[in-house]
Length: 175
Image (cartoon, rainbow, N blue to C red; front, side, top):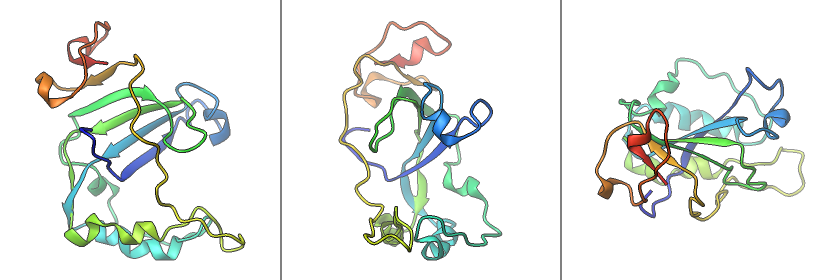
């Protein structure tokens, strides 16, 4: 949004329609991704403390007394949404993006998210270790897709052009 990258998003696959992840990868409505803006936050430290134990792909650690709701903003009713693709190869267009308007608070040392940068795409057994960093593509044009908001807003809040798309949020639709 406004030329800024935001490093935290949650990928969810449509398990009610697709038994396995790979099947969802083949369908337009296979995934929803929630992207969250970050600011100062205290509860995130619990998650950051456990991440070194699950640094490698396939690792498991017991994680109790953590409420994942703390990773979402206090007011989740305001968001933008649009159909799109994954930000990593294969950039398959099977994602409904949901971008939360309000930020989640993080502490100043968490802003740099150094513990997240130590996570790996690879397992302990893999010869070459690949860090989970820079795993995004550059900002792309909307290519005619409609971006909608769940809230009324002024044009200067979203640097995109108004759409004529009809639907439940057509008054808030932008493309």
